[in-house]
Image 1: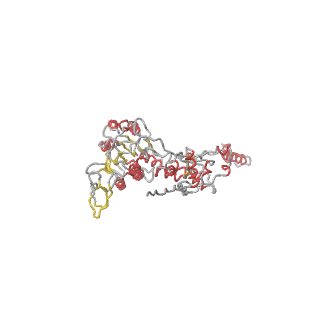
Image 2 (image 1 turned 60 degrees about the horizontal axis):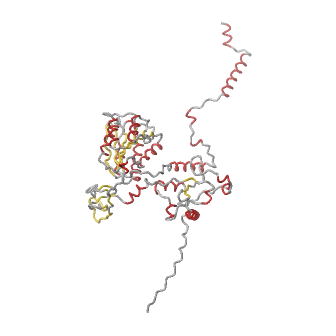
Image 3 (image 1 turned 180 degrees about the vertical axis):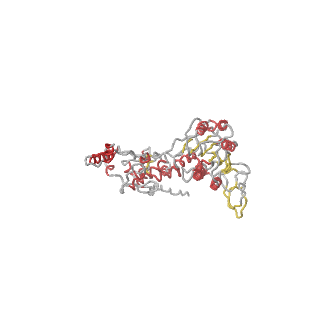
Amino acid sequence: MADSDSDYIASSGDEAPKSKSNKTGKRGKRAGREKPRERWEEIQRAWDLGLEDDNIESTISELLEAGKKRRLLKDETPLQRGIIRHLVLILDLSVAMAEKDLRPTRYLLSLRYACDFVREFFEQNPISQMAVVGMRDGIAIRISDMGGNPQTHVDAIQKLRLDDPDGSPSLQNALEMARGALFHTPSHGTREVVIIYGALWSADPGDIHTTIRSLVADKIRVAVVGLAAQVSICKELVRITNAGDTSSYTVALNEVHFREKLLEATTPPVTRTQKMSANGLLMMGFPSRIVERTASLCACHSQMNKGGYLCSRCGTKVCQLPCECPACGLTLILSTHLARSYHHLFPLKNWLEVSWTEARRSTHCFSCQSAFPPPPAAALKDTPDAERQPAKTGSSTSISSRYKCPDCGMHFCVDCDVFCHEILYNCPGCQSLGDEKPARTTRGKKRARELSEGGAGAPPPPPPPAPPEPEPMVID
């Protein structure tokens, strides 16, 4: 008992230094042993890339260029596609859409991206038609009917912002309503369904596999964009209706990925069956634009207006195009609508990156005349090392900020690359050459070099001198 008491008091001179040395040794071991980092501390943020004050501007511009170029890496193979499309957009309006993992909520973000999808769909497919269906409280509700006016669908979707998500989704009821809307569409167009699905369950009144077999019999394709996790029935639905291909089913990782995957459905699908790929004739009308002194009713919306179009077959007045004539049923379009749908069949080729060695022959963008960065001194020397310089950077962008058309060989900036592939669908260099051969021939290379050095504002060559006119013959 006395020993334990003396040990507990422990105030002698021999014990104090010993305890001090032990504490110091423990501190040394703790200092030498690094504390393991948490998983959330290992995330690499954009501001942890080691940006210095002298190169922060160039690094940010490179990141922006990489983001622009990433959108253009698409398949350029010319395939037969259905340019006349009939699509049903199904929105999940259940209680699962109230989650806030996607800001501000899944519900509000889906409605906003659905409006963007409608606008982009009719921009890429002006002679197509669409309908919008919603899933709420175990039933399917019709938001907008099948039609070709994008503003009608956008207004109907924006009205849903006043409501709150509620109830459970019913995938089977929504597919049956979409199947009924697509059942009477003509066989020369495609039948598609795009679903934005945020729940992990489905309250179906019957066997959904019977509905899937009916979709296959009616040649209806289904694409799904999930917001929570992969659902087995959605994967099976996409696989069966797309001939075993499951690439049309994706789960969004974030807001940007959600928008990218949703807008991928604006590209027309590839024709798979011989019946759809067979040649056929479709009767269309190109109406005349009229401007009246007094307002009159249009046959499509029964609204008073002074302008419109007259059907080329029966003379019925409609207020907007494209549409079907309410009187005779003729499809009425403009020539520009066909031109905008035609670019899907023959897409513009992806432009190539230009190395510093090849970048010496251009100082400005051929299209917008913006100045290119000058090549470094090492690239100006004709050495074997200069010829082996790479054209790409680590982020798959051009090291010289130049992109070359593989046909005409002209150099363009990344902004013109995006504009030509997403809006213009034509190469300014190929269009400026006219009837001349592409850059693969000697004459085409020489002409391309002259145009690239002179730019778009170069004066045309002088015309050849006119031959002398023959003197008139005088007969006595």
